[in-house]
Length: 163
Image 1 (tube, rainbow, N blue to C red):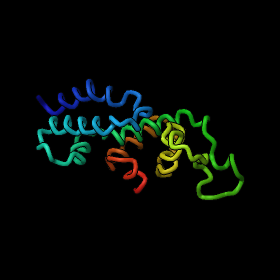
Image 2 (image 1 turned 120 degrees about the vertical axis):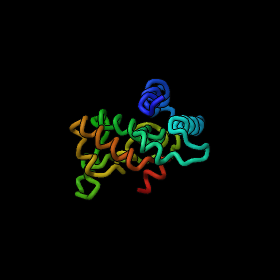
Image 3 (image 1 turned 180 degrees about the vertical axis):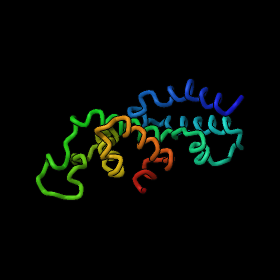
């Protein structure tokens, strides 16, 4: 089969299963297994060896790794529901560089820190400013966000926060 047919097959069968509800099950113990299966599918599509790196293969196919897909989904959730979050300017009147970032509530509970709202705030605040400025235009935001995530092809949240 051609590469285009294999890519379409991936987006027809595997991608909906991987991305459905990803912002809620991302912290599951099975997410690593799903990531390994996703890499195996990518290697099969590209006809590469079992121990070949998939980072460039994801870029070549324009497919987001599961961690990048999680970041994409949670950022779309945050921008869609931005009225549910407080900005730093709403909490205090001091003009800082983070004035327009979302307010990160203080908490010690790991359950809350791994949750959608807290994780979404942290991920949104780390997003480059040029992409954050597009949050009013959903189509431009989706395009810029997808381009950014495809270019970097993040394999973990730590990798995302270290860029």
